Amino acid sequence: MTQGPRHAATEPTAAEPAADETHRAGTRAAESPAAGHRPGQVIATIRSLLPSLLPTEQAVAAVLLARSADIVELSSQQVAELAGASRATVVRTSQSLGFTGYQQLRVLLARDAGYRTDRVTAADPPDDSAIGIVGGMFRHIGSGIDSMVSLLDPATVSESVELIATAGRLVAAGNGLSAPLAQDAAARMTSIGRPTEAPIDVIGQQITARLLTTGDVVLAISGSGSNASTLRVARAARDAGAAVLAITAFARSPLALLADVDLVVTMPDLTFREEITLASRLPQAILIEGLVAATAARLGEVADRARELSLDAIGDNLAE
Image (cartoon, rainbow, N blue to C red; front, side):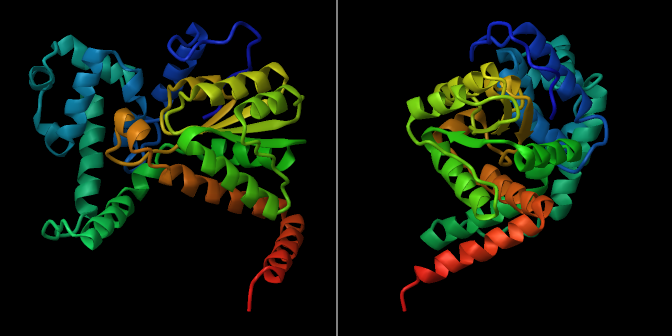
C-alpha cells in the first residue's frame, strides 16, 4: 500500500505514530476491505489491524473472528454482549477497520466465512503424532493462501518491483527471527542480477542506511513491524533520502507507517501475540520468492544471464 510523500518532521515512536501517519493508515484501511473485495480479505484485514485497535475494539474484533461463520445471524447488540462492550463500540470498531458500519462489515465477513467453508474438505480425525502435526500444518497453510494474498494491492506490488529493479543500492534489513529472511532475500536477488546488501550486525545496518542516498532502497522485513533495530534502519534510510519498502504482517505497525511502500501478508488465524512468539515467517518468505520472480521478469536478459552465472558457480561447488 503506497503512502504519501515522506515528511522530514520528527519520526514517530513505535508506541505513538505521528498523527498524519495514523490518518493515512486509517485511510488506506478504509480503501481496501470494502472496495474491490477479494476472498479472504475482510478476515485478513481484521487480523492485520488488530494490534492497532483500542482494547475494547480488540475484544469486538476477536468476536468477529471467532464467530465469522455465523456472524450474519448476529446483531450488533449480540456482538456487543459477547465482547463485553457497547453497541456503539461495535459500530466504532467496524469503522476503525475501514467499513461504513457493522452492517457492511457483517455482509462482507459472512461472504468471507462462506468462501472459507466452501474450500474446506471433510476434516480428518485429530492426529497428535509427529506426522499428524506436520501434515496438519501443511493443510492449515494451504487453506489460508487466499487470506495471505488478499491484502496485496496489484499496483503496490508493481511499484515494489519497480523500486527493487531500479534502485541504485538495495539493502535488505531484518532482525531477530526476520534476519534469515533478509539474508535470503539478498542472496536470491543477487542471483538474478539485482545486487543486494544485507549487513548482519545491527550497527552495520544503521551505518549502511545512513550512507544511502536518493534512488536507493531499503527492503525492511519485520513480521511484527515493531522491531526496534529494523525501525532505526528504516528511519536512517529515510533521513538519508532513500526509499523504504516494508514487508510485515500488520498494516498499522510502526514499520508500515514509516515506509514509503508497505506489503502486508499474514498467516490465517495468527494473532499479534502468536506472530511475535511463534514467529511464523512463511507468508513473508513466500512473498519474497514472488518478488524475486517478478523482479527477474522485470530485468529480463540481465536476470537470465545472472542465473546462468549463478548455476555455473553452484555447479562448480557440487561434490561428485
